[in-house]
Structures are given as structure tokens and as C-alpha cells.
Image 1 (cartoon, rainbow, N blue to C red):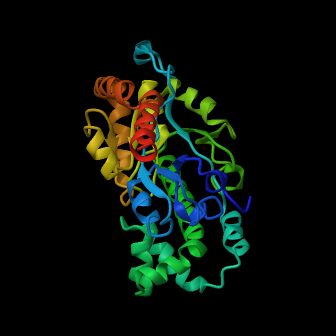
Image 2: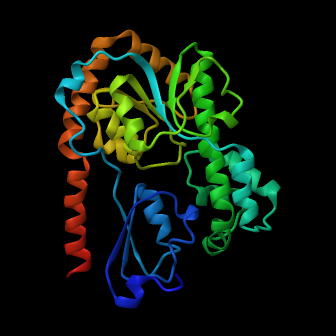
Image 3: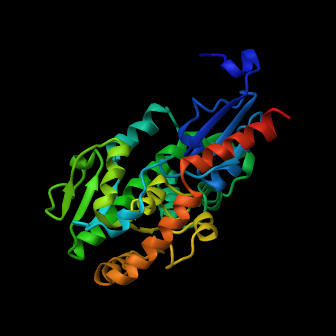
Length: 314
């Protein structure tokens, strides 16, 4: 469609659960009016304001499905120590994104930005500026060309690093997600891969997990539905931290963090909470109460209604 329906008919429109602006250039047309884009990362919402000046950008986190959590799940015997729900793309698949965009940007500079981004808490925009020493307007010219390539590589490489670290430590990982047959660790006996499952089915498996690992690259400052789904299903969530999560959950009382730049901390946390069921149980009870009360899609829908009333109908 060359003309968005909200532009033609002046119909207010809300996009929800948007993740990463530079992955969605075709969908997030900068000329669209009467649109509110709700991002799962506050930083992405702020950065998107630079590119999408005619629409409104706001932050709204993911949530857990309604009516899936039940207090009895906290008492359930669990037969899987560690569960992950994540897909994988290999380097060649991600490179095709870069090639298909017909970007003429210097690949050596792209790799330098990638290495900095992967190992930094800085945003992609900050990393590009740090490496290339260019201004905001120049960054805007290239961010869509190189952004998806760099960000996707960083995401999937971090997942590989997390899984490899836990395998080396001797743990068996139950992974629900597609694409892992293309990875070098697919045939390792410690990676038990069930292939692709729709999110609703993969999250159901959290009810059998003692620990759910949520891996996000250091710069990501929002949340993911895996976190809330783990909580309402009675599993302990060990995740990378973000500003939003630190403001929302009490560390070591409702949630457990590992340092994405020091994966030894992940192994330490996994070992401790698998060996200490009482400590794990205290956290899962607190997390369940918080998530059920504040972080299901029932609460988010009420927030959507308020947004619609306050920013569209007024």
C-alpha cells in the first residue's frame, strides 16, 4: 500500500509491541500521520522520534498472557532445570539482510561498529557516533542500512555465547526455537532443541522449568514477554538487566540478573538457584504476585485504552 489507511481516512491507528526501529523501515513510514507506535524499549521509542517525526512514539512493555498463571503452578514439580525460548539465525542469513538492502557502506567500518555495540551498554546510535565521529543527521542517513545487520548479529551472537557458556559449565539446556540446526552447537548433547514452537506453546513449557533464561544484548533497556511469562508460570527468571526492569522488579527478590558482559555471573546465578530451592521458591512467589497484578495483557489493554483516550480522542 502506497498510502496508509490512517492517512487516507484520518483513522487513528496504534502499532503495539514494536521492537527495533531499523528492522521495520517498510512498516514504519516516516510520512504516516495519526499513528501511535508503542515500543517495547524506552530507548528505541526515544530514538525513533528522530526518524518518525509525524507519528507519536511511546514505550509499552510486553506482558504475560491472561489466565495462564495459577497459584498452584508454584507448587508444581519441575523436570527441566533450564529452559530457553529463542530462535537462531546464522551469519549468512543475517548478511542477506544487509545485502538485500543494497547498502554500499564500508563493511570494515560496520564490523568495527558491531564489535563495539556487542560489548557495550551504549545504543547503536551512540556506537556509530563513537566509531565514525559523525553527527546525528549523518547517523540518520545510514542507520536503516546498517542497523538491522549489526543488531541482528549482536542478538544472535549473544544467544550463542550464553548457551555455550552454560554448556561448558555442564548444564543441559531445553531450547524451544527454530534455526538452531544451522548453529555449530546444534549437535552438542547438552543442547536439547525442540525446534520452532509458537510463542504460546513455548511459554507453556515454562511451567516445567526451574529456571528460564532471558538473554538480551547489553544496550537493550526494555523487557520481553519471556520474563513475564516465566513469572506467571512459576519459573525463576534470570535475565540481563535494563533500566525498566530495575525500576519494575526488586533484584534477588522478584528477579535475578546476570551481567551480559561477564557471563561467569550467569553460571554463578544458575548454580546457586538450582542448588538452593528455598531461595528460588521465595523469588518465584514474589515474582508471580507482581506479574499477575501488574503485568498481564489485561493491564496493558487498560493502558491502551487510556492512551487512546488521552492522545487520540482529545
